Length: 326
Image 1 (tube, rainbow, N blue to C red):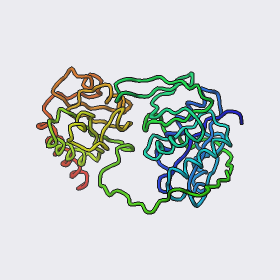
Image 2: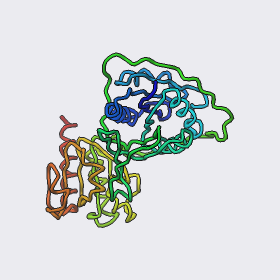
Image 3: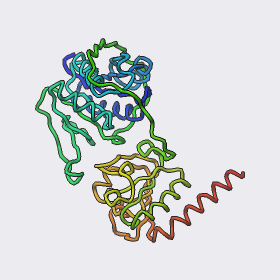
Image 4: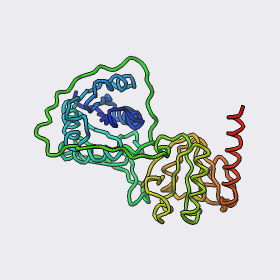
């Protein structure tokens, strides 16, 4: 096949993640723009068991790269496996998710393929060019590739997840020789957290500089727990040290697409809006009725968050208590 779009599926601890389905959504947009077939390469120690799911989601062919050396993630082995799939497919574009793993593999893969590289892609244009944030999200760059092959990483939650449809695509096993490894995975310990994952949450509550300090985020966490929501934050709140970076929403943080997004004390700079503007329903709580987020929100509430959040939290708990009792 002379040219194709290749989506590299990187299972997380042996299972498919939401990022895999978003990647296929981005791949379909790119394939239609360049009028090329969409292929997927599933890489891992149990790739064959996961390939059928991917094959049912609108791809034209699935390459299966399975080997015991891929059971645990190492950048070296996964990049070599992705390079083998890219060469067999004749890919003009290779796309990966902009996760920690995806970005690590993409950098090595671009070197192996002598390819152009663009990370954190947020938009694919009809010409096949892409757009991505740069300079801390203050500018949007439009990128065209002069190399015959290019490697892209796709920002999370920026493209819709594909759903199963039609007849499954054919599967093709790809032989892979890992050679002599220079690195190995000795152990893995998952982070223990009771928090809802921000990237996949259907409800997100985010706080900004308007909360005034870390104490304000205590009220926000109480509100989020009552609502059953993940907690996000603006870049300025993160830079101030009030909350960890993993909560940051925006071009330089996480992109979210929840059904409900509640922004508390966030003015709505373009860097933040780019990370949450695809939310289905946006509620803004702020003292400034003229700030950008209050203007774009589905529901705008003008007032002091320190007065409003405890009242809303108590009402949510009361209603949930009545539902449980019923």
